[in-house]
Length: 67
Image (cartoon, rainbow, N blue to C red; front, top):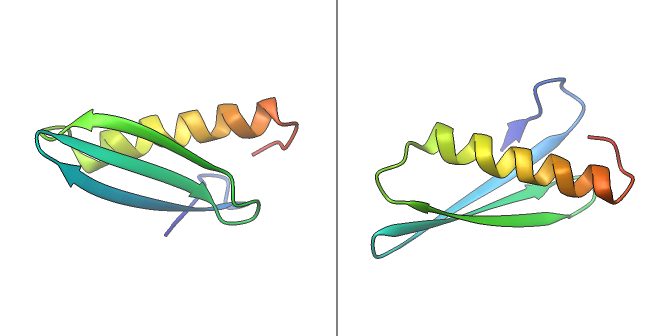
């Protein structure tokens, strides 16, 4: 579990390796909104988290829920 940088949201991350790729899910703990990215297995977890978190923020903003 990782709190959002401003401390207002908790985001859960799930990493599932599949061959030479990793499926990364980012889930907003408040709303249950989930996004998924696929990254190369050699990518660092911090890079994967950053991309997944950015996608989650975009999804929440699009839904009208400011993250």
